[in-house]
Image (cartoon, rainbow, N blue to C red):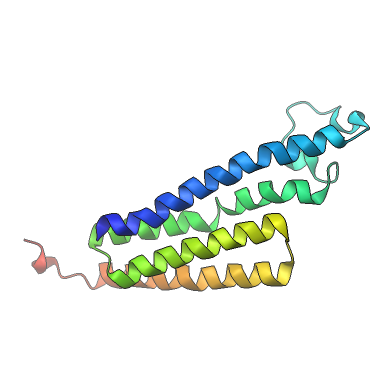
Length: 150
């Protein structure tokens, strides 16, 4: 069962990389369409945030989502590792896949549509799943029977 709990985390890592590669053509395409290139000069060592307000908002949405995939999911990765170590149950694996599925839908919604009420609902739903997983990880560790280890 340990490997099964790690699979959703591995998929979320791959998904995060897909979003990273999604950023490149969207942003470069938007930059290429800006007629007044002088908006990009005057600051050395620019960062992605420097493009805010200089290219269309929609061209920044993949980057915004990529940032989000490095925030709350870091807790997910920790919980998955904890559960993998102590031995997850089938329900834990189901919750992990549910979390990843919701995060993928959240990504697609944020990048393609980005209507806040639905995006927030997806975020809230994924948070509830993550909290449930975290509580289960606490229960699995706090209430572990050390005498059961052979």
